[in-house]
Image (tube, rainbow, N blue to C red; front, side, top):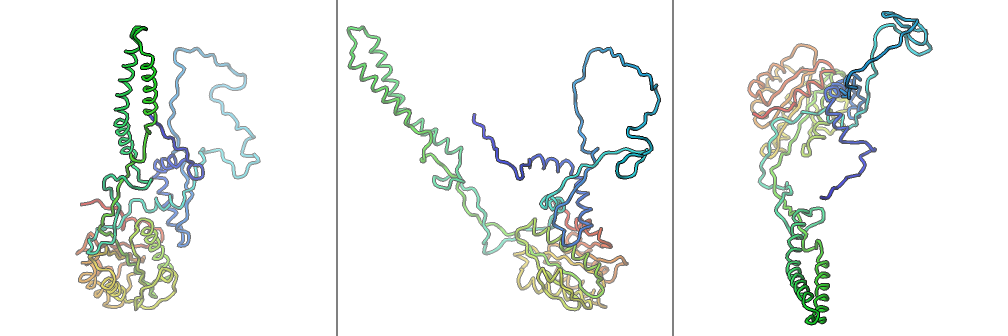
Length: 426
């Protein structure tokens, strides 16, 4: 039996396996720290790692020890100073008069917390753990340009990275048996003839014949040794072929209200929500495009930089954004080829009867084509007309239309997780 020992060092000489076990074991503590970190962070430092503290009492482990066993007799020495029930003075002086920093106390006890740092990758893993895009489907395309290599049997030709060890060794073993069989047969016959000749009486032995048989045996043994253990003829490779795959491409439309009714605090909350969404999509999905739309009285498609940092403002007509999204879908993202998602953030304020127009746009045009629509209303006040009209849409599409309210920054992460939590398949 052959053993292969991988002695390659992990990054920074740490044990990645043991670290992963540690993270899994204390997942509850870490997720609570991660949630607190997300709530208190600004937009610019959302991606960095985090320092996590775990109470020392929670990392203690039970320890089994061998007892002394048997019967023991113990004589405890007495003392001249103390008797049972006496209270001993703390070393270093009484009353907290020591030279240490901080204030002393004659009550309480505790242990230092165990602190360690999460890397950026580990931090984001915990932030987006258990989240997914709802109702993501594989769309069938007429002209499939997405392929995936799949196993297609064994080939005699290939690159070393695809060598099939088991099949190669099997072929080598079969070849060695086939090549050695006639040589072993001839060797066995020569040895039997030599033994028969040597058993003859000394007068009847043929020295010439014995010498010839020994030479033949030596030649056959060399031929056996010359048969290679493995030959290039034996090598077999895993054959891969490109198989067309249905596409699971998706596009996320991010709609942000930048009207005058949105205060700077409201806009910061909206930006933090969309930044979480942006990081989630960029990290977990390879084929997801993002379309950024800002609107006040008019809507405009913008790039990432302008979406997060532009200071443009104005009145409020929400339907302008929904109309623009509808036009972009018709021009660039056919519903039969793309999974369509929309995330909208607003304070709920809208111009007069425009909320009714938004409802009609969603019911008649957008929702029949969308996989999922999320609406986040950022306001501490009572819901306004836009929320009420959206409730009609949510009643028609309960599994594909979600509405949540955000009052303050601490609500962003819980609302985000609720909107994009992994749902059980029906």
